[in-house]
Length: 404
Image 1 (cartoon, rainbow, N blue to C red):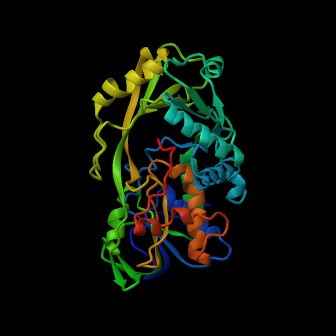
Image 2: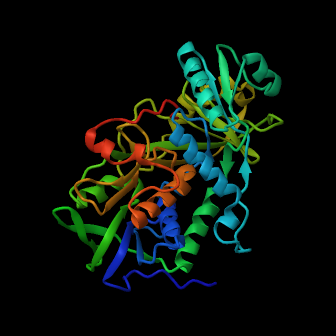
Image 3: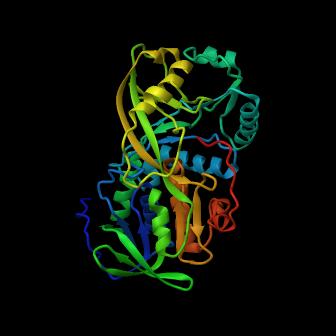
């Protein structure tokens, strides 16, 4: 089915749901709403950048893991894996929909002190009870399976080779967007610049082009710009853009087997990326970034990332940097967990924000969850209420011990 071009002006003056942001999260919400047999309303998705060139979606590393310390985060990722592995059927069986490969080489958390080792042991018990394949490995066990590591100073590793690793998230995003549009969701290249609010609800949104659109519900799917959207409704959300570098490099002597997504105690992470390798590391100073700041700091590789990699994998002493880019985490400064649900003050304004690097793997469950909130005013399949906006209002963090 050939879809018409995306317009810049809305077709109607009123929509049941207006989604602000049409990238991975917004498109997941759009498709789940359009596919919900109990929802028969109209949906408008307003996306300011139709190329998605600077969105977090475009700059993702597209990984999924079940190694979390909270049950809800484990279950969110398990549902995401179910969606990835059955994506064509999940979207109705269209033969044009590709398989979404999942490269299950797993995450390898390495502990260099007893504090982190005890956290990983505790997390493993929870994960195993929920069906995850996480195992605690001694240095000798790690060395037997992955002889390329330097394990000096390492107490243990936590590794899950089952349904954990890298997946092709860009295809998932593309097909959610296509299928949502086929189902009647209207996408618009424009920008929401203002909202009109009664005491407890948003009555309308104003577009940059001047149109005023009445709305039943507003979904904030604005990624790193979430706070700008929230403030239009007179609300606050603790989300800000944080710069994250991704480095793609070649190795003079390839390792001969997949490198799990390894989280080094020094802070860097690395993994196999096709014929190359991928790495990243939070900066030593990590302030909020300007929304348009994607400038590469070349010293970050030389001074911080590469030394950590070369120490942990001696073969990485001889590497060639192939590509570098900067993306933005939609960083939740309260607790680095997702925020989903309505405000108690503005009851038709729903947040789905603050993923802090977990957006791709959590997008299936978040799209389904928002669809249920809109349609039934409650979660029906997976109770996401521990991640609700009400904790933001109470200023009560939801602690997650396994954050990268």
